[in-house]
Amino acid sequence: MSTTVFVYTMNRVGAVGAWSRYVFPYAVDAFAQLGDDIYIRSGDDVLVVDENAVTDYAGDPREQVFTGLIQWPWLDFGAPGVTKQLVGFDIVGTGATNIQIGYDQSAKGTFTEPFLVPADTVPGMMIPLPVMAPSMSVRLTYTGGYKWQFNALNVTVSDMRLGA
Image 1 (cartoon, one colour):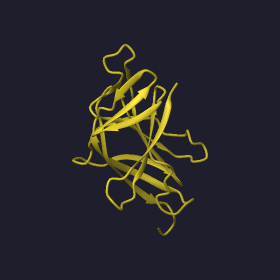
Image 2 (tube, rainbow, N blue to C red):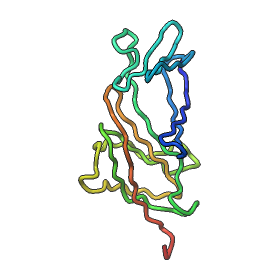
Image 3 (cartoon, rainbow, N blue to C red):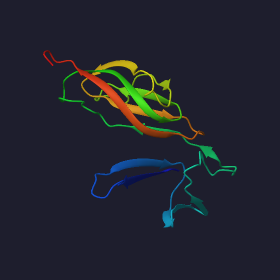
Image 4 (tube, rainbow, N blue to C red):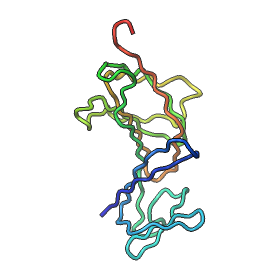
């Protein structure tokens, strides 16, 4: 049994926040906060969220690694319905990731094959990835069992309209 939790994070007062979705591989009965720690109750277990953990139930026979998945919804990158070309991208963070680009919004599972990219490409050149579509979705998958952090993704897109 698993539990899906949606969290709204506000980083600055008065600024727009962002939604995150977390899928726990166990039933979550309750959350509690004490000081800076968040506790999760699952049946008879009480777990504490540790930002350095790379597994659930660390040190327990039920220990389980988890992957990190970041996905943006379908982005128009300009005028809706107009074909654009993704020229390439830069990524900033720690820990290598697999990237995929969704290119058919009517078939939400249609993505490029995943390929491994370095954690930080900004010191070098942009990674070329030519994909043409009216809207695109970016998916990053971080391997389970390793600490990672995502900071930024910069995409370079070219509008394919005549005269654009």
